[in-house]
Image (tube, rainbow, N blue to C red):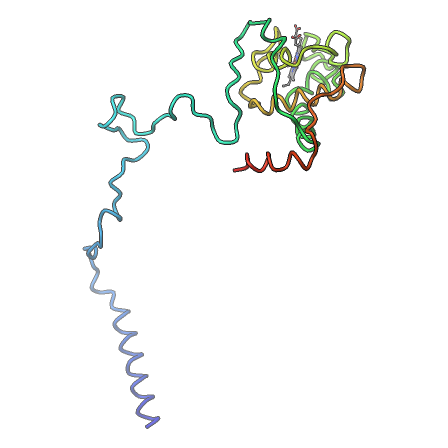
Length: 211
Ligand code: HEC
């Protein structure tokens, strides 16, 4: 009985082997497709033209006024409106981690000119590569500068300083300003006001923003 079993198994193995090795009969036609709508999408590809829209574009812009998740509402601060600069401010508050992030961003984007000590002695200036003296943010002239004016300098630039609006989103700009204000408060400036009420209280609000 066992012998017959082994013979049958051996026979089957050989047959299966032979059938699967039959490469002489190359198939030129694909098999039947089950639900072709799923195999070949009927949706428009993103970069193809589209007869359903007047402008012919398949990729649509977000509805105007859309705010990306986790981003701030637009600031509506108009360039040159210096009166508005003075009173412009934010409701945002920052815990220690966010303040550290503000410092990191400052050192990347601003320190090259304003110096990581905020004294206007960044390497671009001290090495003579940048002729105009960057603001010494520890100087009396800037210690009490309204936060909104700083915001305007970041958003629109100021004379020789270019705009940093494309590098820093609204929240990041305020993080950088909070960091400057924190350092200024420790160097004779006004008391620091951007601290989150408590790290614990800040956590759930942060979580609500998380993606
Ligand atoms: C390429 C060099 C350079 C970089 C980088 C730079 N600044 Fe400036 N910044 C200047 C110069 C120069 C001035 C002085 C402008 C003037 O008053 O003519 C200035 C002025 C300022 C002022 C004072 C604005 C005013 O109204 O007088 C602030 C605040 C400021 N910068 C913040 C920043 C911040 C924050 C960053 C980083 C996001 C930054 N700067 C990056 C060169 C730079």
